[in-house]
Image (cartoon, rainbow over all chains, first blue to last red; front, side, top):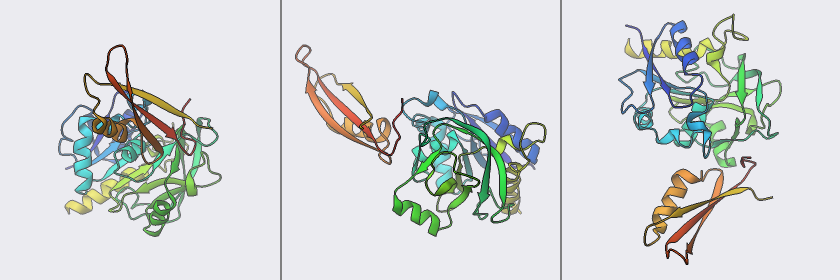
Length: 227
Length: 64
């Protein structure tokens, strides 16, 4: 039986199609979830995709956090359900307090769209277990509010607990504190990442196939969990 | 430089500051990156009170 990975669509989501496609290319079954759903339909993991949920009104992710489906996602996440938030999904996870800190306007105030070097620093999460520690990958970054910020104590504890999952390499594109590109929660099952793994899964459209490893990682994790 | 937003909440009848604070804390402002203050104002014409939530953005999180 294929692992079922839910991909949530909020009004204004943009990358839900690509995220579902990445799940399928990796060999999983993508289950499309709707923001107004009361449940996550018993999926084995959830992806919150990139985009501009609710038009980014108020703050990025501020309204999506209150979507009915997020209650089920948050309940699941607290119980160990693997959740990956990409870009806007990362912002939603921070607004929902499932991850610490916040994503703010890029320091230079410009939108950034580029192929970004990223170094994997934690391979202990269900979403990164198939990388090698310190591996450098190239995946697209496209965001105007991608600058990760948190108070010094939070940053220190993230580092001490190995919860900085990935950092930007070859230059910090947005002023993110300590070059942070991705973090996890304490248990490791919830990961937020600003650049886009789901756009780097096919040679025809991506700058690499590096992003696919996030999706093969979760499938490997789920296969191990049920074995 | 101070960048922020001012949100007016109108109540029918008595202003509920606790409710206004909860709305500001959970939705209108993100306390991780923003501060907010509450202020009540009497509207002389309708005799309704309004609570203003001023969110001050810190760390360059202000939006255009």
